[in-house]
Length: 209
Image (cartoon, rainbow, N blue to C red):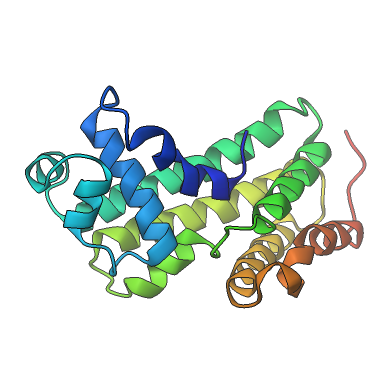
């Protein structure tokens, strides 16, 4: 599977000129590229429609408003995060510790991508502080699920106090995303994998049953 940045930034390249792909998918791909690279509020509906090789009428037929399109865009990002975590599980069947370490490595690789602009969910949260915005529920649910998945993986790997460890890994990831946004790949965020593994190495594990 390609990196998160590749998934976010390059899918539009395969769709923007392919009229055989359904309009809804072309619109989402174009929105994903433009929203992530430039910011959501800076991108107009006209620009998205043009990039998707369609028109505003078609866009509004599939998404009743730009706000609804934003929410759907964020849902596709959450789907990528879930798929990344499941892939880490799939390639290490029955070995929860290896699954957790694999996920950490994959996240670290994503953070070192040249075109990464931080976490797109966190970026969107800054742009939409309103509690009643359709994007907020998607963002909050996605972050909650991500933390819960880490806690579950820590528990399955036999770590003592998996709730605290999972939350610490989650916060380390969140901080690394912000740091990469501000300092690029030369900042401490680029050392996420090393830091996360050191955190795991410092924690007690229960012997396997």
